[in-house]
Image (cartoon, rainbow, N blue to C red; front, side, top):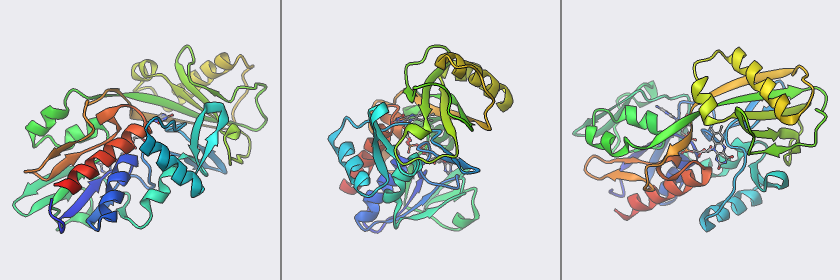
Length: 312
Ligand SMILES: Cc1cc2nc3c(=O)[nH]c(=O)nc-3n(C[C@H](O)[C@H](O)[C@H](O)COP(=O)(O)OP(=O)(O)OC[C@H]3O[C@@H](n4cnc5c(N)ncnc54)[C@H](O)[C@@H]3O)c2cc1C
């Protein structure tokens, strides 16, 4: 990669923002785009009527020193705090807040879904958003889930074949809020039996002031796969039933209830290498799924890619 190369990163999740941050800090010309309105990808928070739910990543548990340093840094900046019950960190004011410091000062185009890629003699051009029409880039970074990357690189079968074996599983997530606290001491469970894998109580997290008792209920991969095409209303009712059974609580009606389908939620089969680069094409790929299923994997993958590009 040349110092003056124009770089575009598709995906403003933790991996894409990490690679863009490191390239920008080295003075490179980098722009990020994301199809969503907000930043952070699956480090997500949903707000509605005064309620806030972390409906993606629930807790950050660093095992790598460099990720632990990052957590310490964002904790110092007031966008993360330790959540004792889950023995890990959460973002502030919600999980999506944890990525904000990395994004500071980066050029980011949101609500920009890239639907196809072209590689001409003058570089990469992106289809799907007017902002990028007529623009070309020397380097393209895909920082998106494996199935989405796989689709976009279909004109380059050699690249596609290299990522073929990595796999991701879905996760149906229910956000439910109750006006009175449920009669239970439970605040966090990550080894549920039945359809549910994780239960998290938002009010138990540091820095949360929801208008009532807010919960995030995540179905396991097997159940989510089997119910992938169900209507949201059906999912809400099934997961609510399973939730009350898991807590051994008498059922009450939530005042707010939303089901979210993460089609590509958690890595079930990682790529087995931190990132992928094709120097001749000027195409690179990173994301949690290269290494595993956690935010730390996304961070490490993004870092590894930036280091590779900066050393070229
Ligand atoms: C329900 C759930 C629970 C989880 N729980 C935990 C947990 O407790 N702890 C933990 O460490 N991790 C957890 N994770 C995993 C963690 O959220 C991910 O590992 C991490 O956020 C992945 O970051 P990423 O940058 O690789 O991808 P993403 O966060 O998916 O970012 C990719 C971005 O690319 C964008 N995008 C995709 N396609 C396009 C396109 N064509 N054009 C433009 N933009 C595009 C998306 O909008 C998204 O913002 C959980 C994930 C889910 C879904």
